[in-house]
Amino acid sequence: MNRQHERAVLQQQIDALVAAWAGGCLHEQRQQLAEQLALVSNQHGRLVGAAACVQALQADTRNGPMAFCRLSNRYLAIHEDLAVGSLYLFGQLAQGTGSGLLFGATLVLQLKRSGTGWLLDELRIDVPWTRGDRSAASHWQHLPSNSGWQPGDPAPAIVSELHAPWRRVPQAAPSVCLEEAAAELYARYAFAVDQSDIDLLAGCYSEDIHGGFMPLGALSGRDTVVGMLKQFRQLAPFWQHFADVLPVREEGDGCHAQVIVGRIVPERAQDASGRALYGAHYQLRIRKVAQGPWHICWSDYRPGWFTADDIPAFDIGQVTA
Image 1 (tube, rainbow, N blue to C red):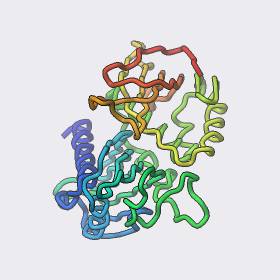
Image 2: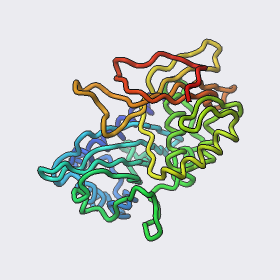
Image 3: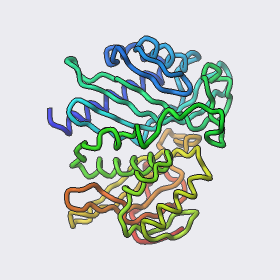
């Protein structure tokens, strides 16, 4: 199995495991779990053992499967017999006839190769925000506040500097597929911003990054961009940048490409017809130097609703912030 195909198969396995959690049938995926699976979550506890972890996670669907569940921001790093993936999820915990509780989560999953395939060895779940009927999560040990972490709260389940896939598997070979590389770059940017990992964020940008960074305005230079985002991030510690990478277009020089990223708003993720709906988008220009990773070299963030059938045209170079 070549590397690209193995990555795709393993990502499907991860998606199936997360879908089983959201659907209340994780027990049916028992063969995909390591016997000593570790779960680290401020909502479910810190547990070891597949049976205990499954029992804790199944409690989330005690009143029915999660509604409006959607995954985004996937990234998967593989090196030899170790794989570490990250993804974002939002969904609604059911509460009888009530409206339930909408929540967002960041997941980091570690898998190890065994004689029978890849097994989930560690699962970290961080829930930075909730909205709605908090009684739907009365079984959770901790509910986050909209003020972010406060004294007396438990330690974070995910510390990006220690647990992010880019940290745990730095030797992972980059994707040779441009669309996958662009998605990885956005996932890394969003993970870095949302986890306040400024070193990881700095590695997403070229030295000459410039563009529009609403509501901060037009910015230029990596030190300015990263510094301003670092300060701005402190105003919203519960951020989660859910998004889909949409069109990706090569520029023809072998080292530049253009990308449109659609920002997902969990409360309004689809229209009345069920089409994917986006509340804003990024216009990005990205650059690859030699055999190194891709970097964002130009960016402009633009509010405005659109569907997957009406994606904005490329408009690189026009700053609107």
